[in-house]
Length: 219
Image (cartoon, rainbow, N blue to C red; front, side, top):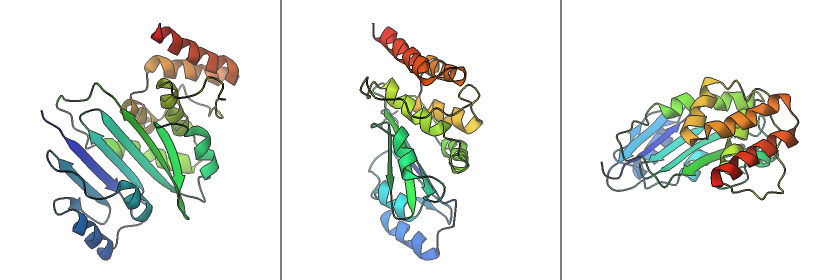
């Protein structure tokens, strides 16, 4: 299989107007556009829009997949339900970033896996499986933010002196959407298991266990 890219955007809080759909059509002549979504696949050529601009203006969720190893999911929430400062406490590296507009905060989670996914693979159900995380975040369940931080840890992108962010309860019993996020971000199962020990421990022993696991894998 040659190079393949998949783009999907979802409008959840409000449908796109007819004028907004026309704006998207001017960017993409082949994309599947409706009042609630945009979907397009590329085996040649590339996406002509700017995902950040589209998230700021039109959409509440976005998924990008490239079979050379890049995966990216973005979730947009109103400032009234997620404080940008809260998101920033967890989003501290290239694998987990956050940014804000005047009305929303956007959480970006991504991986760039050099091994790639050149086998046949269908990404079409991923966004619908992950999107419930957005509702969970709005309700104050920050486990998905912690999973993003854990992916940053997995990539060894944090300084050893950096403190662990607040640990949400229930890491040992993730929701279906959170499990889908774990799979999408390829979070190491042993790393997640070590982090989940924190349900019964203080932060220091849990973080020490995570770092010891990473050190053992590097040996």
